Amino acid sequence: MSSVETIIQSIYVVAAVLFIVGLKRMSSPTTARTGIIWAGVGMLMATVATFFYPGIENFLLIATAIFLGTVIAGYTAKKVEMTEMPEMIALYNGMGGGAAAAIAAVELFKDHHLPLSVTTLALIGGIIGSISFTGSLVAFGKLQGMIKGTFRFKGQHQINILLLLGSIALSVLVVTGFDSNATLVTAIFIIALILGIAMTMPIGGGDMAVVISLYNALTGLAVGFEGYVLQNYSMIIAGTVVGAAGTLLTQLMAKAMNKTLVSVLFPFGEASQTSGDAVEGEMKPIEAGDAGIMMAFAQKVIIIPGYGMAVAQAQQKVWELSQLLIERGVDVKFAIHPVAGRMPGHMNVLLAEAGVPYELIFDEDEINQEFKSCDVALVIGANDVVNPIARTDPSSEIYGMPILDADYASNVIVVKRGQGTGFSGIENILFFLDNTRMLYGDGKAVATDLVNSIKEL
Image (tube, rainbow, N blue to C red; front, top):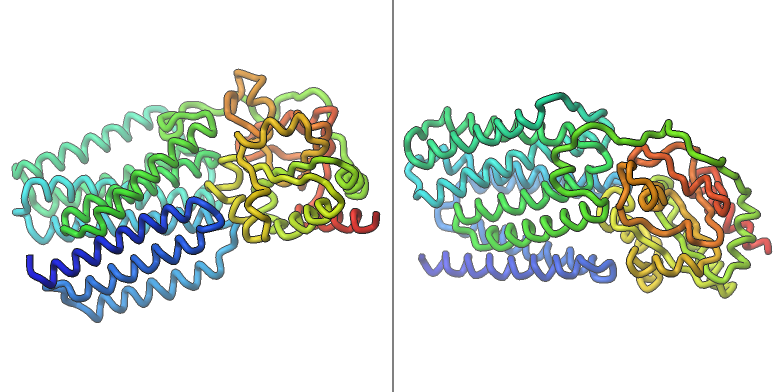
């Protein structure tokens, strides 16, 4: 290795360390912004260093690609709404997997006499990256509403397994040198691309957050493998870290939904309970003025935000409401479920954006015991994560899923547009309990009415 290459690889290692530091800081809303900056600096260092690598050509083409990518990413990042952030993550994650697959394809088509280890990892990374690419695109389409339904049919999982085994069998032929022509390599990538689509199409929308997290982990692994192929330390370290973090996050999210990764990837049948099932009792409405009085004279109020708050962009008004209550001596806290919203940390980001102090935000394990001493639980836009049926009905699809114990509060106020079900399609029995009142309307408009009613007291 020449002195120039040694310097470049050293820069790659420093960049990888910055990625790790950035990822660590992203674990907390209070340091996430600086974490992104640290990781961005690392990426900039690695990109600039690559231009000085011996043998690099087509500088104009590379610079043009970087410029176009920067412009497109910058524009979309500024325009995308917080409610569409999961779709954006799925799309960009898919691009990462596609890039890793492209690297593998270039190396395999360029030289059929690669070392055994390089060929093996190139193929593994290429297959994983291809699956992540098309799978993430399907996930994007489902979240965006462009692809509707789950597209399940008998024998579907068996076909997926055959596709996977087929790609592995063809890869073995290439690795062993039995047959390494371009047609065979092309067939491997085509099968992997089809497998990504076939794996994701039967998965329901409620499980998309887990799937996106899984594909994020796969993209990281693919990048790590291709880093070995290119002997790029930065890609190896960063890809491994992303793969490990994504795998851990996927497991945590599946656990938070009381599901296994296998049950998410290989769903059988439909939900055992649907929105049409009979529920005893009736939903009892309440006016904003009465709800405001109830909270204003409470001692403790716990606010549970959900996707409905994100859609309505109501976080600023909810925080204004909280400030008014705090000024009146009310103990106000926010309860966040691990899968509230459409991605991990979705609600934390929204509340941080509104200026809510981090010390007022609690996760499920920290806050659940406090609902028994809570005067009012305000549920704004959340549904499945507060459904008591997860504790009471073994036949329910969400039975056993850890939930926020909002029903234990003395009073529950649910802000909701209408009487529909949540993302899982399961009727929420919380809405029918004696201590629950329904406050119908757009989340932002309702929060505004609550603010005005408290100001008038």
